[in-house]
Image (cartoon, one colour):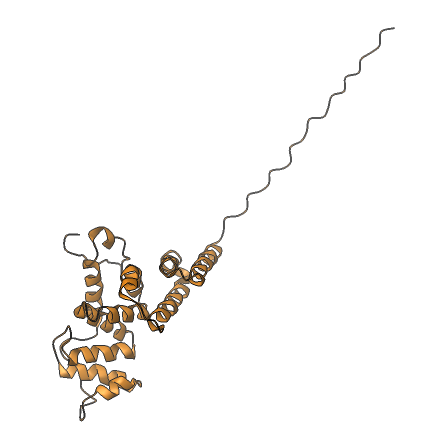
Length: 232
């Protein structure tokens, strides 16, 4: 009797359900990661890279810009006030990032530019001190007043110098109090050069002019408009 062959058909395997893709990271998660990366660069003392990371954080995460600006302020303030100071070669290396920070209204960056440019470019130094004075910084008011008194990069104008020094002295700046001439009128008002937005814009425009054309385009815009430099 012929035997029947039994054919066993294996069941068709059922593929597992697809693994759902994780949702894209939120803006807050991306900002947190960028912040951690910038903080890690700071911890490694990679100064220029850390400055670049914080500048990118401010540009890319406008809703968290205050965090980035506060970090830039603290980082640059530590840099300019450290016991060893900032050497000329180090400043030259960091100057593009420091300038960008100053254009974001970071007062410590304005002060560092004013201090470092005092000998090599007094007019630019004065403008940066004026930009910081506009933000209410007493040290910048003092430096601006002293530069006017000594005609350092700006025409001498005793009335304007007394005005700046008096403003600084009024908030407790001892150097300004010591520099005020005896009998000066505390009600003196500024004359000649003033620490207003004209000086701040002049400092920014001057910074653009001192960079090669290809580098100027990389500097961030301020108040919605980048200053035009000749030939750019």
